[in-house]
Length: 192
Length: 173
Image 1 (cartoon, rainbow over the protein chains, first blue to last red):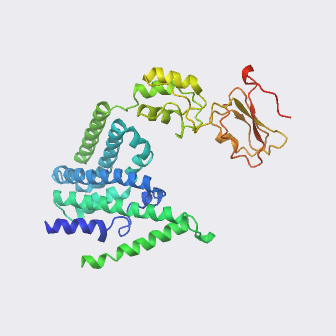
Image 2 (cartoon, helix red, strand yellow):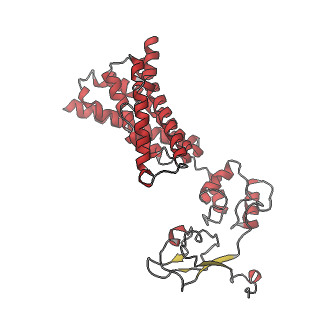
Image 3 (tube, rainbow over the protein chains, first blue to last red):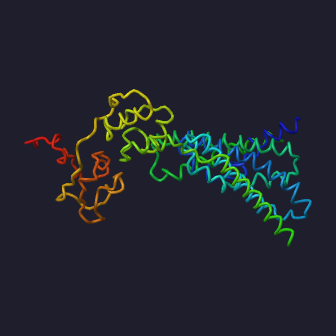
């Protein structure tokens, strides 16, 4: 039980997917311009992350390993992730057209979010059980959402600031991301 | 090799079937109500209602938004929507300007041909190309004023439309 809790906190803070492992940087910089969009995007990504990790785990241990095809895992996972994103899109479009409008192009873009594939592969490398994979995926999803929301809030403040011309736009965004990354790396002392 | 091909093909097939079933289970919910509302809106895409176009406004109406936010449609549209939805026909929302009986006219002697007003026009009523003088097709223009802000030399003016006799006024001295 304590292991799972440590795994969860570790995935949220110490091994944060975005700021420590540098996965999923495209939505991190692309969708963080407004706080509302960032929250909507992180909700959709969190859903796909958790589901994709669970399905990949089952596929790997129930199909690929018994057939001695473990080397096919990357291509198989990509297919699974793409199908899950499509499924999510269909479901959201049918049940909540308003949310579908709000998410817009970002929903299909989750397919190319490397954090989703990275999570499935990392969970395999750590040789986690099914429950542990789920917890790890939840941690990764929470970590992604937390960082995206924080970064979007910071960027909304930055728009108001008077910056030297050379720093405006992309430079200050990347500097902010770098400083946040340094901050999150400080959590590594917590892991011991 | 054969096992690998077969396995991947099976995975693909399973997921494909699943998606196809899901598509049948949850068809895109562009309900008939939204389409019926959209058909009664004037399709000027002028965004004066606060939504990015007529279809988003139609969706919002289907979810309970007020029906009196469409200045180009005027009373006619409000009455049609009230009949369709069984709601009360209200006068146009007070914060919005009433139906503009006006069209945009470009002062062609001042137009520098920058073409910035072209993408702004929701109904493609402006003819022109970069470095060529532009002009407005009067019959297409809805008087929505969206072409005014992008013009760098302020050469677009709105004049009362001459097409409707009751809307004609004496020109100002």
